[in-house]
Amino acid sequence: MSGGRSDPDVFTVGFFLIPDFSMMAFAAALEPLRSANRVKQTTLYRWKLFSRDGERVLASNGIGFDVQGGLDEQPGVDIMLVCAGYNPETYDDKKVFAWLRRISRSGAKIGALSTGAYILGRAGLLDGKHCTVHWEHVASLSEKFPEAVTTSGIYVIDGNVLTCSGGIAALDMMLSVIASQHGRAVANAVAENFIHPRIREHDDRQRMELQTRLGISHPRLLTTIIRMESAIEEPLDMNELADSVELSPRQLERLFRRYLKTTPHGYYVKLRLERGRRLLTQTSASILDVAMSCGFVSASHFTKCYRRIFGRTPTDERRSVLAGN
Image 1 (cartoon, rainbow, N blue to C red):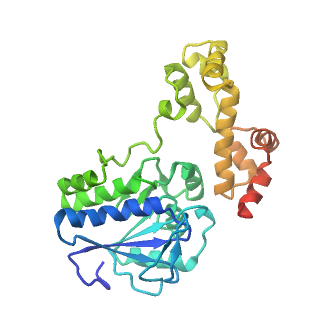
Image 2 (cartoon, rainbow, N blue to C red):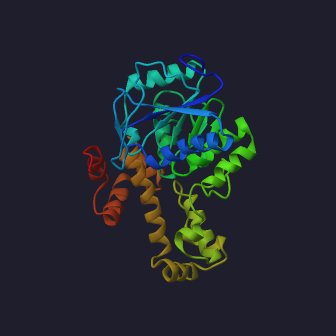
Image 3 (cartoon, one colour):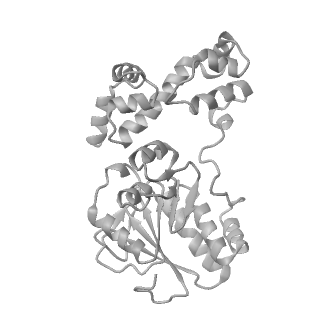
């Protein structure tokens, strides 16, 4: 992108800050640029911060950042990264969406850190594109923007659109950008500066391995849980699950009670309800649609189970989000 550029040999990265954006993802994307300049002892990258009105923006941790521009200015960047945080699904600003579309049409790349993918989706910039988002929001992003191809990788670069799942994944995405522009050796040197021993590939898992996450190592139990996690909309029968790991239903129940202090059925129901909770708080899907997507036969059955586990009804949950509680 040439408009407004003072030095076409320097790659300029813009960061559009949404109030309550994630400082972790923002820093993980910006700091590799500074480090690359230090490694090469020259200015490879510059960066500029933007907000809607050109005013100071607070991150989700309350720390404020001054910016260099607003929507009324020509950004003059090679890439614009949207930085968001909590409740991005409620963000609705047509002026911002139009501004992002103009930047994309001008030839600049467009990207998002973590839940910033919602803003790109609302701007129509994810249509036909592979993209990713934080694992808690994968299901809702897919439901909200069916024209996008949502993946669960840590970052995706699809043509002129870059998305990452947030957190430290922003570092891996920017290291990939640096490697493509200045070689792997420069990217490796930047990674080592940040004590980052391995530059992860785009399709690496977002979440830690199930064994580590749950603190268990029993192979048949882990296999059962993996199968549960992959069959939320159409739950598997308990007998079928037990057969698949060559155990009897009673043996499977003993495993769950011993290692997880619950029953296979209880664990599975809670897993499905947690998916429902994310859909309730992140999408506008009806309670019936949420119930069906989590494998419940009716909204009333879903509501009964939901209230038993979370202490409130799905309707109350949604009202609480709308009220900002």
